[in-house]
Each structure stands twice: as structure tokens, then as C-alpha cells.
Image 1 (cartoon, rainbow, N blue to C red):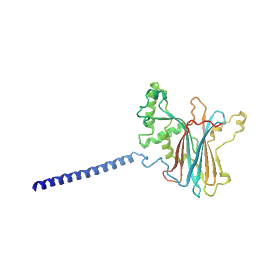
Image 2: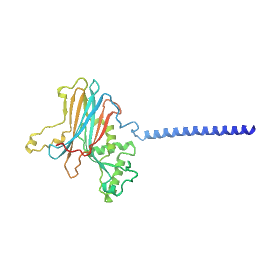
Image 3: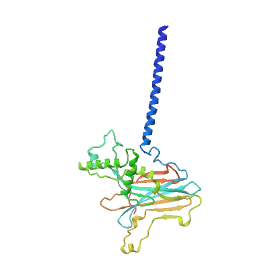
Image 4: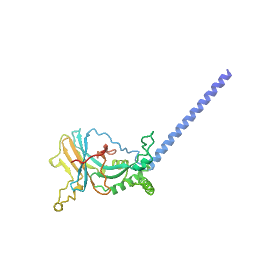
Length: 309
């Protein structure tokens, strides 16, 4: 009997000790998590509060997104036309804004290098190795954008977030890697900011997006039905027979009752480093929201889109 009591007492003591230890570990873990969260907030990173995912808006619906290529009227390049219809599901008029980014994206690893060191047969594709490079892009919003200035704004503005993924630090590392590979004889070059960097920057900076109205049951006036930055041919251009101002035509918006059609025109000029557009990013915002203004996001792969004849 005494042996049984001693055995039970020993079991109770062990159980009590393990329970106290578990409570201490849980408390310590919670403190560590809280400290880590505080450290993240102290670093100045606002990505914890920001999401590049679109928030559903029941008042509007995007339909009939289409793309077509044509020769430029000035005879010096090509134009990619992006068209989308927006259907209103609300009786009221609502304000929105939009970015449309057309770009040329290719694999950062040259085909020759990939042929020399192919992916293993048991691993058809390694996401970590599928690096993409943007060679050329044109962003359409409420104002003209110069790629050099836009790229610098992206790298500079993302730098203070401290994510380790974007910003000037990543740009410097990318530049050093490209120079190293160039010294090794590889045919590589430094491209623009990545598509992820574009999405993150534009989603958090909608102030320069192109504004438009999605009308409800009461349609627009006659003057508001067509919104465009089109400029006609001047007398001087007629004399020269060259349409110099053609590339400045960036957008055309047709507004009607409960429907708005947006067309953006992306120009690429023939030149030694000519690139055609093979991917399009569309971002739509609700300016009235205080945060998470993105209400629509889509990425379209154009593939080998032929010129319309």
C-alpha cells in the first residue's frame, strides 16, 4: 500500500512540474511575438496594414476586357489599345480612378544559359529561379509618366518600408549582380522595377490614377459623354505630313447611363531596342475610401498578339 501511494505521489509531482513548465513556455512565446510585432511597427513598415488585393465593390462590374494592336498614325511605331467596359449596379453616380500599365516582360535568364543549366527533370519549374525582367513599359494615368522618374520613385518610396524585398537596397544588389554577370560574358541588362514592385507602388499611390465617373440611372450630359486627351493635327503637322503629337493621345472614355467604356492607347516606337507589349496590368480604385482603395486588379498575358490589319 505504501508503494502504491508513493508511486501516485510521484506521478502527481511530475504532472504538476510539466504543467508549470508549459505555462512558462506559452507566456514566453507570447512575449516574444509581441516584441517582434512591436519591432516591426517600430521599423516604419506600413505593409502590415496594406494589402495589394482588391476589395470587392458591389456597385461596379468589369466586363469585356479586350486588346488590339495597330500601326501608329505617325508611321514610327505601334499602338496597343486596351478596352474595358464597366457596368454600374447602383442608381447613384460613383467616382473611380484607373491605372493601366502595358509592359514587355521576359525571362531574366538567357535561353543559352538555361540550355546549359536546365531545370532537373524531376522539377519542371522552380519558382525561385523563374526571375522576370521588365524591358519596357508605359503607364497611363492622370498625367504623363517618364519611366526613369517612375522607376526612381518606386525604388525610393519602397526603401523606407524595410521589407528587404523592394527598394534601393534591392536595386543596388540587382545592379551589382547584373554587372557581375556581364563581366562573365553573359548577355544580360538591368531592367525596370519588377511587376510586383509596380503593383505594390501603384496600389498604395492611387493619387495619379485617371479619374472617371460610372453613372447610375441618370446618365451624363452631352458634353460628358466623351472624355479624351486627343489632339488634332495642327497646320504645321499638315505641312510636314507628320503627325508629331500622335503619341500624346493616351485615353478615350465613353460614358453613358449605367455603363462606361475606357480605352487606353499605349505607344511603342520603332528603335534598336524595340519591344512590343506582352502583358497588361489594370488597377481600379475608389477614391472615396480612406484605406484599401483598390477595388479591381487584373493581369493579362497577351502572348503573341498580332497587329490588326
